[in-house]
Image 1 (cartoon, rainbow, N blue to C red):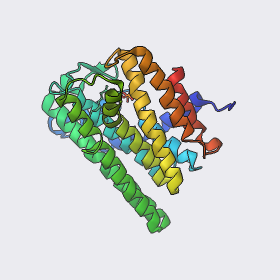
Image 2: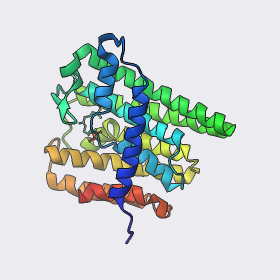
Image 3: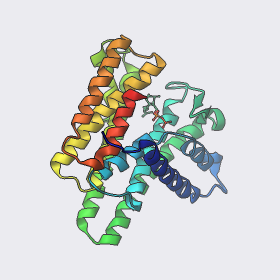
Image 4: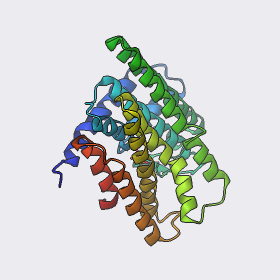
Length: 283
Ligand code: GRG
């Protein structure tokens, strides 16, 4: 049995991510802020989220023995920004029409719909600016073109997970099709709408840490199963979408075990990922 202390790991890594998000978003000045756009970006980004996706970026890199340096943390922060934009847009009246998010009124309730849409747009685009900057910084520091190539691959992985091959496509399906009935259909939707960004988080961490093909494939496989398992946990908590609670609970166990199996080729450095997966089942 490993004696890895997940709570302590989470405290340290979350504090690093929160500090970076706060420092970087603070540089965007709010004076002469048209329509309170920057204020709206800060309001949603700095609200207390679990920071799960950026933590997975860092945990994937750590599985390969890479400690979080500035470019990696910036990439992790970029993944959180994409997630944050998706929550703002998902809460809009045209989508889920929610009043509360992260324990506070949703963006459109505070700033109005137009600014909420623009705050989401701005966070999404700023995420890619940060990711590109991380690559430029790492290239300048190392002079190694391989580093730049890795960052370009990370940009592509995040764009793919977030966009019309991933989360946006899943959201469009969710809005446009009747609620899925079978567990298989529920999981198919979850894999796109929620899972694609988790998968991308693992891919970003793996690619930036210089994973070989087998390592990258294993980490992406972990992310794929983790993401669907995460959605089951969320649905079970909401009693949402779930055809039979028992079946969903069983699938949660199977998917978590499959995610853990994907890590068999990694050593103790993958303990944060393993502990995060076990937590899905253990709560
Ligand atoms: C608008 C393009 C677009 C996509 C929206 C992810 C998503 C797609 C919508 C969120 C709807 C939702 C509540 C789905 C359930 C799973 C989920 C993503 C929960 C929120 O993620 P957490 O629990 O949130 O990690 P925090 O606030 O902790 O970051």
